[in-house]
Length: 550
Image (cartoon, rainbow, N blue to C red; front, top):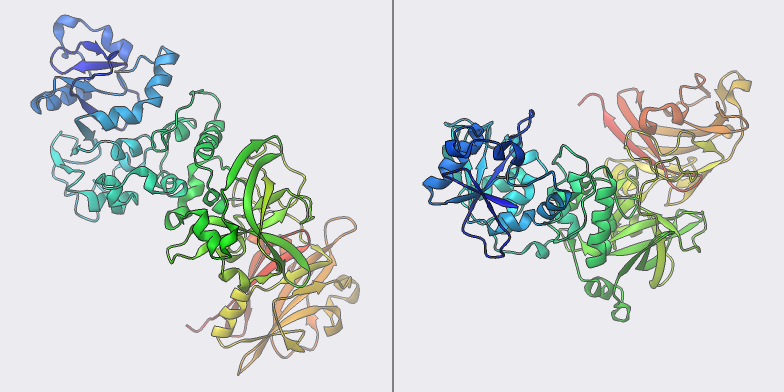
C-alpha cells in the first residue's frame, strides 16, 4: 500500500514496518465514485495535486497545515487492481487507522455553521454515522477531527464523545480508549454495527474484522457467506455461548440480528454455573461440523405446559440486572432425548425465547438437575425451504407456519396471566377452575358449518376472564379449513351473555390473521389475541385487554 505526499501528490510505498507519521482520511464515498490509485498515477507529476479531486486536494492541504507530509486515503492509496494488495489492505485497515497520528473525518453533509451539540444538528444526522466502514474508523484512532463540508473544524472525538455515544451507542470508554475492545462481549460489539450499511454485502463482514482482531481472506462475490465466515473465526477464538441469545441458529447472516444484544454482557461460565452448583464449572466449547455446530452447554430439563418436556440452556452472559440468562431449546426431530436442537425464535414472545434463570419458572417447571452436554445446533441459513415446520424464515414478516391445525394444544404463559391479573381479571379454564400453566387441549372436531354456523358450549374449549363487572370468553375451536383432511384452529372473543355464538365462516380462522393476531371489540373493550407457533402442535397465546373509553 501507499502513502500520498501532501505537497507533491506523489505516492510513497510503505513496505517498511516503520511508517512515518501520517494523517488518515475517513469519509463517505460519493455515489459516482472517488478518484482511484490508477487515475491519480496517470496525472502529470509536474502539476502536483492540481488535477486531483477537490476532496483529495483539501485533505492534503489540511493535513499539511497540521504538519503532516504524508496522508493515507482509502480510495486512492490502495491498488485495487491487485487482489493481494486489496486483501492485505482490508485485513490491516484497522491497524492503519489505529497507528495514524490523526484521523480527519470529512462530513460532506454537515454545513460550516452547524452546532454538533444541538439535538437536531446535521452532525448527529450525518450519513457518516450509518456506514459500515466508518465504525472502525471512529473506534481505532485516538485523535479524530470532525470537519464540515467547507473543511471547518467542528470538534474532536474527545470533545464530542458524549454526543457520539448517543448517536452510535458505542460506550465512552471505547471512544476514549479507556477500555480495550476485548472488555466488551462479541454480541455487544456486533450491536454497534447493527444499524450500519455497506455498498457490498461482503463488506458487512470485512469492515468488522479489526473490531474482533480477525484476519481472513477476502472473497468478493461470496455474498452473505462472508459474515458467516467472520462469525466462525470469532467463535473459534472466543467460544462463548452468549452468542446464542438472538437467533434460532448459531450464526446469523447480518449484524442487524445483534441490535438487542447491547443490553447483554458476557460473564465467565464459572460464575454463571456457580448459581446452580459449584461442581458445574466447565469450559464452553464450539466445534463446527457437518451436522451443525457442536456446542458444549449446561442444560436443564424443562417442562412446558402439562406434558411437553424439553431443555433450557444456560448462557455465559447476564442482563443489566446481573441475572444469568437461559434459552429455550427446541428438538430438531421432536425428541428431546436427541442431541440436535434449534435455539431461540424471532417470532416467540420474549420470555419464551430468552429469559433469566429465575424467570424461566414463569413459563414452566425445571424438572431435573443441570447437566453438561454436547448438542448440535444448525449454524447457517439454507438457501432452500427446510422441511422442519419449526424453522423460522429469514424475514420477520413471514409466519413460522402458514397452517395452525387441530387437534392442538394452547398454552397461556405465566407472564400473560400476571398481566391479566394486574388488570383485574381472574383467568379460568372452561369456567370451572383457575387456570394454571397447563396446555389447553383443543381436540373437538365439530364442523360449525354443518350446524348452520352455531356453536354450543359443549363444542369448544374456552378461557374465561372474570372481572368484577363482567366476564369475557376466549373461545377456541377447530373447523374444517382450506387444507385437505385437516382442521384449522379458530378463535374469537364473546361476552358473558353467551347463549350460542353465531360465527361467520373463515373470519375466526387464526391462520388467516395478519401475524396470527386479531383484535375483537366486545362492548367498550378491545381484546387482542396473538398466537405464536411453538413446538409441533403447541401454540402460545397472548391476550391484551384495553378499554375503548380511555
